[in-house]
Length: 438
Image (tube, rainbow, N blue to C red; front, side):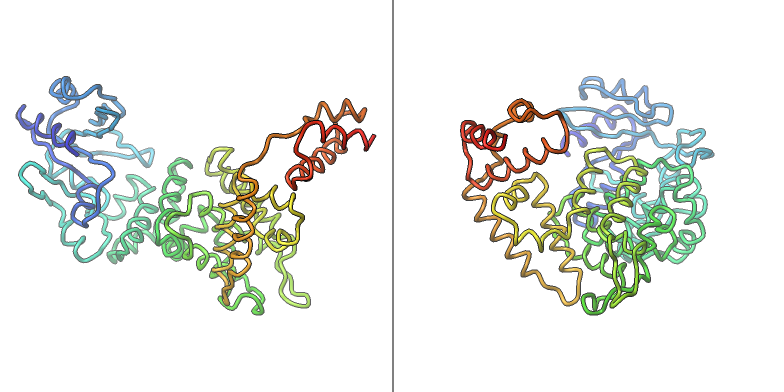
């Protein structure tokens, strides 16, 4: 914050207007500590660079043609933008042309009233040209000006409206709500998959993620961006185990149970853990979803790959989805096999998914979770980290006279389990055991 005020003071001394803008102003008024301090000014890009040449370490021209620079100092980045009005958004995101203008005109081209205010930190004064304070006090998300025009300028604003409404536990202004319904199909039109993913991540990291997904379903957005999740709605479950209702209701209840500390991969896994149930619904002696895990994992991979997530992130979420029901057999596994799971990098995340699945069920029973967690703590006292392998595959093949293949893998797994069980601790013991198998 001190650096952003320094930037504003420097621009002021040079004869320009300069304020904090957007989300940081909203957060300050809500009593929330802002994450970023964006700055708007009457100075044009070249003038900004000239005035701040000695104040900043450097400026990055991320959108200089649109009047947007990023100032860098002490590892912190500050977006600094010239007051502007926009014309034409043929790509559904960026303006075709900009005109540098006044603070009032700049406010009018922003997305929501609660994000369109400016604040002068030097004189402690709000500049509100769009009645943002009024909507903030009433708890309303309202598009500035014509809702249709704001949506057509950037189609991602449909998803952003849902995020902001639920992030702050607000309501939609009626015309805004109507416009979101009417134009919901545009949410993927001309919008990069990575931008959609970034919004979904912010939604999932919010304490009101389930409410946001319920809004997405109501407005018509969910069936467009995540049809696999939409398909869970109305899929009945056996009442013997799921008095809470259908698969959708169970999933939303599980999402609501997650603690604030739950990482993103866990949140995605909870959202996706039962998305294969619509494909596997059958009524036999009761409602069944045989092999739904395989379908859930398949859909999880499809969804996350479609949204351009990294391979590592996709693999983690798919692993969590694939193994979220393995806790019952885990209790009966031999010690070595238990430790194989306990020492897995993602085991604690898997435990969070398992607990959320249990808490998303009515009646809820987390006794198995507590039992496994107790076993986990006891096991860690005896073997806190995964030990290095005693023998590598090349040694096994040489001693056993084998070629690469499934048999080598089975022997390596058996050797590893004995090591984790504590029955084998040295390379000499491992070689002796191996030679007996020849």
